[in-house]
Length: 372
Image (cartoon, rainbow, N blue to C red; front, side):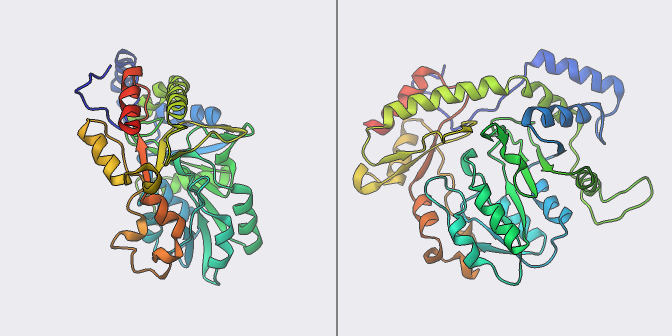
């Protein structure tokens, strides 16, 4: 338990049992096979496919490379990609690295995901794909987005970095669109220290992705495409196999924290938060609150600083918007007038501490910072 004078951090990494991890390390040392599609790498892909309810998955050394590789695998090397300003900047960076042009559309308040009603107006003859984000693990409106993409002949890549294990009516949201990507960063519900994955829907596409993440090699002496080194090493794969055994327990712990937060904050005027969505298996990766300064009597930033002064560390996630950053602020669709909902939400949001190690006392301290 964190003491009253100690910091309560916004997250804490899920760590496997050290003795069990050492046993896996001994096997790696004995095999002398530490990367390049080793035994643990192969085991992890199979275990993740089973757990997540997907058929084809390829693991990577971080969560950004799957985004970059997804666009390459779909052959998207020229044109515009419709995306959201309300995400971690890696989403848009992946578009830039593929020499594609990001086109920003607004989000909806109910999920902080891309607003399907705004997509068609952003489509031009140069549009080649849509890249939405399952923000905070809350599913986008995939049926609407996929229908728009099909109507206009566009590809859909879902950035599912937050959405490990999320299901809608018992179906993995990773099965939507053409490709979904995951992040296994240390801050996520499930982690491999650093890592990520790409989910696709055919053996042929997985084979292509596996080649692209291995410099573009097809076979021993043939390079068919300018690939990249995205391979996950054996140490991280072993770490991930062990964490997979305990991820359900950590999701349950997070769910319990979310229930306490909601019960305590429901009557606090000016504080809004998400309820669980009907039919959705959430992973409780984040617990964002949205501060209405006029009703609450304090701005988001004032509350954020007050919490820090009491050693409670939330995160203004996502603030600023991607469109406020220098590489993207001059794009025509980056104007705040084009993104009124995203602009408002970015100025209101604080993600409260959310992880499996929070004690009852920690949660009380966090709540008291907000209620007082």
